Figure (cartoon, rainbow, N blue to C red):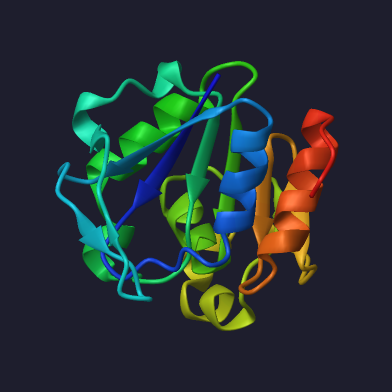
Length: 172
């Protein structure tokens, strides 16, 4: 069982670190992917060395897809390769998506929130309102609808706890 953690320049890893730790504890192999396979620097200054590029990975090889918050740019939000990977990933059975903070906008841009309830930072929802036209914003810290987990910023432990509950492992 594998997790695809997609990282990009200036992403925020503090909110997804508890999730990655919980999934690793549950025997998932975590694979870090970047858009082009090059290392990226997180907002905290940590350099992330990827296992590979998004374009060379098969979405069907993963059971989880994890998107961090932070570093949101128009080129990231509009990246067709990222959208395609997310859509192909979400088209399979028993696949789970988790987006922290403003990464909910990436799910919206990829067309993966239509008809679903979701959460995220209110300023992100306001700024990118057109991406959420057919979605229902809850304002909760963590929201699960279907196979999609979304979370506000700075609630990484709550997101990890919700994911652990869903996959039947003890949160630590």
